[in-house]
Image (cartoon, rainbow, N blue to C red; front, side, top):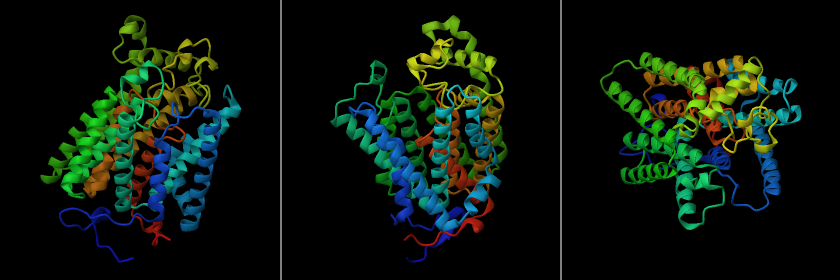
Length: 429
């Protein structure tokens, strides 16, 4: 492999645009992992029980292979680094495992918590084996394949039968229109960033930006579109500040703190309005937040256990809280409330600290090295924080968004600390 000239922030020196380069074995593996997490079989496969069993087995194989690869390249250094530098994340993972002791269904909790740990390791694997230049190429192909294949599926194949609610917007190859909308928004942000930073041919970049924006609009997810608007506004501010050499970290930290407070506190303030708004609730969330508030009153310190509160429909373990059996109650539709109802308010506070730390690290990295990676990382994390207000995609097993979140935050922390201690990434074999 020929040596490549690198500049600050891990950027590759390039001419008008950065030409395609080899992804390598680990890069291809990262794309496969992300696409596995994005694809949903619901509605497309008749026998879901067999498909889910095979898919779970495949996930365990992939997770074990990722651990083996990490041990092969880095020994136990990756684990030691994670324990030292991702303490809030480690606390949350420990609490998910420990919640089996007070869970309403201990066997389910321990199984799901182990899967969450495995899913998180996949994000760490991507971060360790894909430094920023390679990670950006991984995301280029992941988003392009995800959006193009989704548009193709929607246009060429009949929509799966998934109830009237799912017919209101495109879901592509993903599990829901809201999830597809969020993915399309992040893809739009990504291609806008690399196109403006001249890391892709302008025509190809403009085409992908248009396709991603079209997909985001057709998904008809209002939360995702709001996240797109906020993220693009923040990125416009960063671009202006970078050109004029103005400091940005303090402003981004204040914005991050404000976003976290809105995500964590506002739903609790809106929850009592459910009896007033009823079916006229514009957010379509207050009835879920009211149920979450009831759970917090019952078990404020521990919650009811990881993965046993939401998404069980008629098999709910909390029949006295009717909303947990509602068809829309796949989650609390708020990341912080989701954590609080499952693991308790202290764990939710740790989650807020973790999210704020991730946003702060991205802000620090951008101010130090305004690279393409740091530019996108800020946009992605701001968008994630906005979406966290009305959806729950983080701390979820086999989640495209959770794997990507961990990969980006770990990579940002590596870049801040310097990759010397983790740079045993030789040429791919």
